[in-house]
Image (cartoon, rainbow, N blue to C red; front, side, top):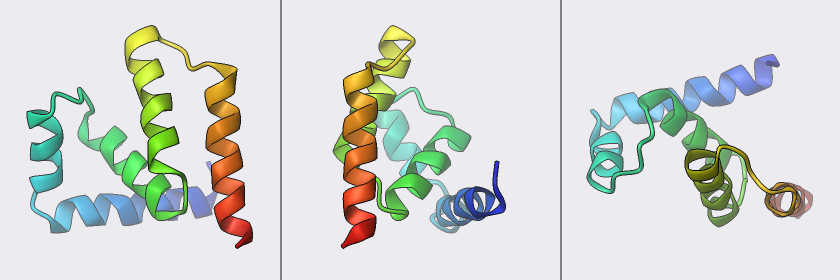
Length: 86
């Protein structure tokens, strides 16, 4: 993991910590089955420009099926790159 990725994860963790857990509590109420670290990673990815809908599809595949589809990888990457270029 690069230092840039570590910084993003750290920033996401600080976001979660500063909210005193409400975001985690909401994720538990919605039965997302995400632990705090995974939730922090998702927050960091969204804050860095990843499309939240594409990320949700990807995470859903990982949780339910054990592996994402290649189409979802392309969608996630395309949306991330598209946002970074604008």
